[in-house]
Length: 229
Image 1 (cartoon, rainbow, N blue to C red):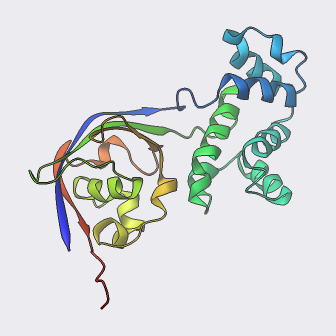
Image 2 (image 1 turned 90 degrees about the vertical axis):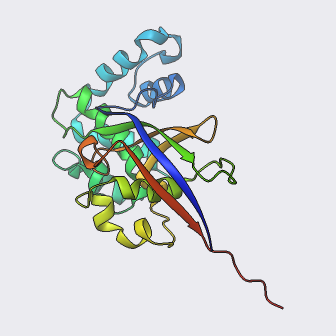
């Protein structure tokens, strides 16, 4: 078994009400068309979001939710599931509660667009943006590009035991066990150098107060498979 030691630094952590840049100009144009806005492609790019928010409010709340859910999740959910979620979204933070974790980021984007369009008639879910670094402290080890799974495992030593990830996923967070849920827990996960990362996730999963310290140490273990003779 090999182990690589890291120094982890949380350089910046913010709570936000939307993920900047999630919706593209192409998304706005496509959605304007779905919300029956004429000549969406000819609209001024700087006004597309505002136009979309106005177009959404021409529809009843649940109907607007169906259109957005269908746009982002038609390949993942049945028509019946979409109808059910459109009802639940008006009172519940489905982007935090839905059992399929890999859908949370898209449900969050939908929820917040509806929250903004309808001036708070939908629940206000929040996201967490993290700027951090994972620096290898073993001189013999070169930096490697981490996965969402390994990043969460490294976060474990710095997170309070009250953190919901540690409470729900104790074994994969603290042992050398598979952690497929990490793909849905962390949303954006980007690095240009394999050391400094930008991460987004739900405030429900990680918030600023969950970190005991903003600088701590962690280790990743890799079990080497024995080669049969």
